Amino acid sequence: MKPLQLKLDRVEFTDEQFYQLCCNHDELRFERSPQGDLIIMPPVGGDSGNREAEFIADLVIWNRQTGLGYVFSSSTIFRLPNGASRSPDVAWVQRERYLRLTPEERRKFPPIVPDFLIELRSATDSWEMLRAKMREYQEVGVRLGWLINPQQQQVEIYRLQEAVEVRDLPADVSGEGVLPGFELRIGD
Image (cartoon, rainbow, N blue to C red; front, side):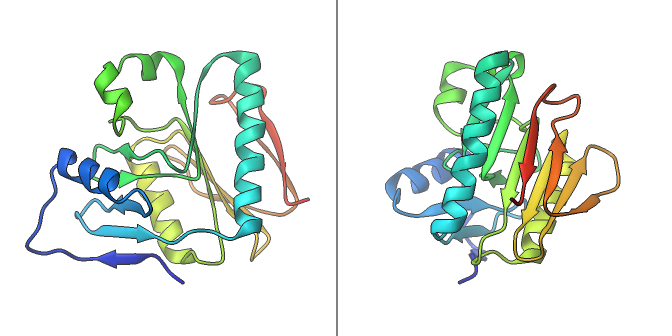
């Protein structure tokens, strides 16, 4: 099952309307493209859900030790400067940047670009849609992103203003200067 993308030519959602739509239908996961298309995200299976939880746990442990920022799950939607509303599988925002948001902005969908994120391809994900999403993240200022593709046994590393690096799995990946000291073994 692929994500359902609805093109609503006659309906434009304000940020508040999109927030209310998501709250009123919390059994569904929504995203919004930069063009305003509403995307309904299918649930993931057990393997993908477990991998995602493991990545979040590793990042949370590192973050608790360093206190450098905030970790977010795929339930968090970020309002991006290109008009999109996206929910990466795992995200991290530097502490000082996140604390600059007002309490209201932090309570709803934060209008901030994550510094780091992970997208994990599940059986329901379109590979080309995920790659386009990663390029979008790169264009709006995500400093480091990992697109993990278990089906092809690869990870793509997206860095701000750099070409994409592809590594075969298993691979050791580094948080580089974005997440200093964070290392993750992917694909065991």
